[in-house]
Image (cartoon, rainbow, N blue to C red; front, side, top):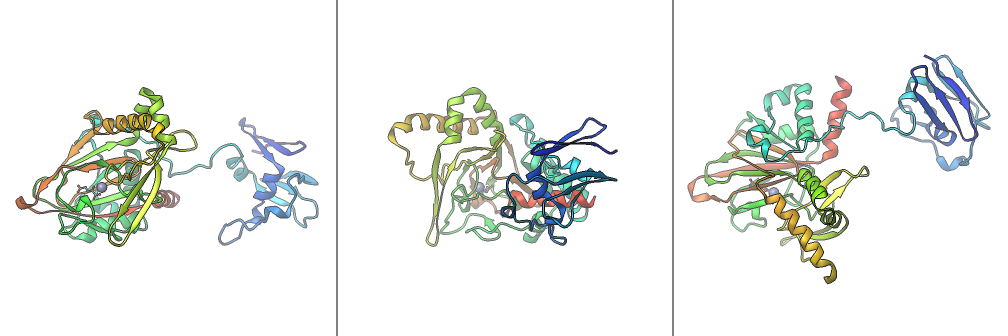
Length: 370
Ligand code: OGA
Ligand code: ZN
């Protein structure tokens, strides 16, 4: 269906019979000319500084299925496909298969409510891969079942998503009680709910923990949806929420070979004001360096949120068995574990990280092939 075309001083308008109206500023049309993109890579090669901001076409017209725009001094008019330009009209975001509405959860979810997906399906079917990845985004937490008893099995599932994120703990890491540990995870002590590597400039996105053995007494897992707790804090205590989103605090990890530091707000919002990230790790929080006058209010807010994260209202508990792998968004869902007694049996998790952008990319690519 052809739209009708109206030309103004700085933009043109297309009005389609279905009621859709698009406003197209001339500078946007010039910048978006299809011939300004590389034919193979699709990257923009047009140089914006080569035209004036108030550029206006010398002629515009509709041709069958096309909008033709002629620019001063140009040899050829810009030809826009009308379906394409309707779908990409300014003022609305491009459709994105990686956008999955989060489902915030609290203790009612229970360990048995965590979505479970079979490893064989994920490895062999793109549809199963996509469903599992969507659950990882929706709940920030999913369990992969039926993994073979070798350390590659879980990492192969992670590689179905994308590139592994290497850190100072390696491309993959072994969570077990070790001599001379450089990390509390490598002892047998309890780990209260936390997010990993808050000391990094970009804390890793999805964490994969493949349970190889969980035979010791203790060692159960706990999880909490930090986004749900943060949204409740926003409603219950706006002042605390404001402080945790606006004030950054220092985090640090150091051992014999590294000293990695970063400042982070405990709660980060995206450009729509939604909670996009939780950065909470009491073990990696460095010496608090705020002005003394800020401290009473900040400590009140921080301790209140800490109390919420540890409260029964938010936490779920489950026990990983050999052959299961828990996968969670480390920038949303906090994880923890009970202490365990290494003299009563072996406990070994094999882990790695894959950043959020990798998972989003795989969701898009699989959707495009479906
Ligand atoms: C970790 C961690 C949890 C566990 O390795 O970061 O928190 O269950 N491990 O051992
Ligand atoms: Zn951890």
